[in-house]
Length: 215
Image 1 (cartoon, helix red, strand yellow):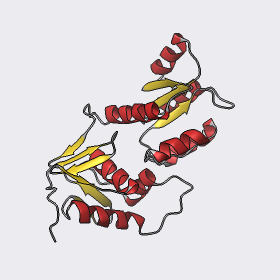
Image 2 (cartoon, one colour):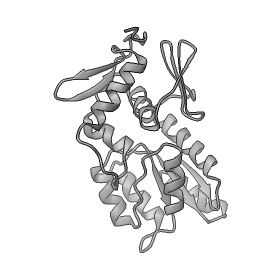
Image 3 (cartoon, rainbow, N blue to C red):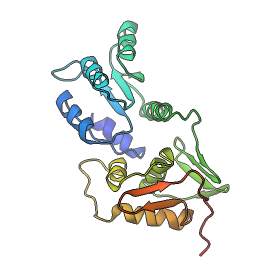
């Protein structure tokens, strides 16, 4: 679990590692997660029971099942109980990252791999951003923040939601961290891309221009 958490963190994900079903349920009840990576071999509770209960309770977060089980009927059962995809241990971390991106993309109803907004093109797999064909240099957290806002275009994302997508539970977060990241993105992408909704958070409007600030 720790190795997987570190590997996904190095790919730019904020990852909370829950060691049992009870902790997982508590995390899902309080956090805003893009995806769940679920090992079927949970201590004390079968992963399929956890998955079935999560879906029956209305949980809609995409779930990628991790299993050491190699029987087809067991994989079929996990999919029928609400899994969006599966990966068999041992797995390659690059493949795991790709499968996570795919389930998140499908859950958002976005078949194409790139996030495109006017002249802005973000590639989650290659972790590159181009504005009007000019490559931009973003820090990992700037990249994660921009990707999250583009995934949720037209919807206001609160400061807490943005913190959840950038930091895991163990991280020490400065009180103005989100404001600093937004300021830096505006400096690189233009002031009009990310709109502040006072008292609520930030959003990217679907029709808002991405022309870079020339000042």
